[in-house]
Length: 276
Image 1: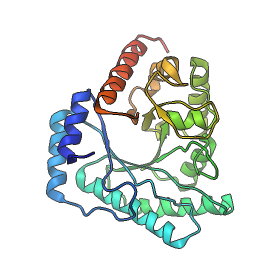
Image 2 (image 1 turned 60 degrees about the vertical axis):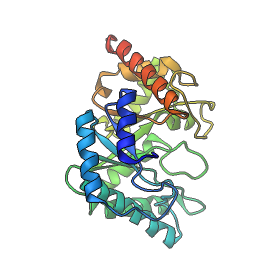
Image 3 (image 1 turned 120 degrees about the vertical axis):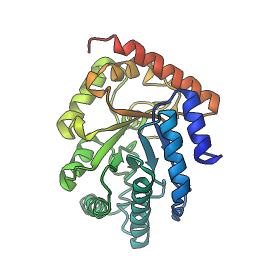
């Protein structure tokens, strides 16, 4: 966010947030920012004062751990490892990453490459930091578009500090109908079977404008898209999800952020009364 850490904390606090997600560097660059220890100490202090816990780093969008191009693969791994180091120094709990695209390579070979990259990154991870892999919208050859594939990564790598972040807009785009209570229940049951809810510490809550299974990533305001109020109400009514971290990645201005936060909090208050 423009204005640095202090502005990010101020904005999150004003919106009523209890968690915060940031980029540690330019999200469209292969060059990680140098770690400024004093600035990170101040950021941690401001977050504590504002009651913002946990904090999440979203890795740069350019990361592609499935690439056959050695330069891209190694550059992606460096970016991931840099954010894990940044998180350790800044007392930041989660590093959230996309996996990238298989491109034209054999998917089995790409799967192995991703696992090796995750294993390598996890060798550097500090205690108290968790690496979470985000589901994709399933477009083209993107990795991680299905719950089963995400579960396969978790099982193949098998590290206690590796988890999954589920983005609702991406799940919808990948074909998971989470706009009704029945659809949400089926989705959560699939997650439990394939991944285990204990390995899903985080969600990205985003509505979407695309049709079910469209494989396109288009975030929209909470309750105003295809998932709608009923879908988010059903998610928030699931008691086993109430200790998870949820981050909003909805589009628009500061005023839109505030509106989306007020909407999701109102839905959450109603869902707390549900017997689900």
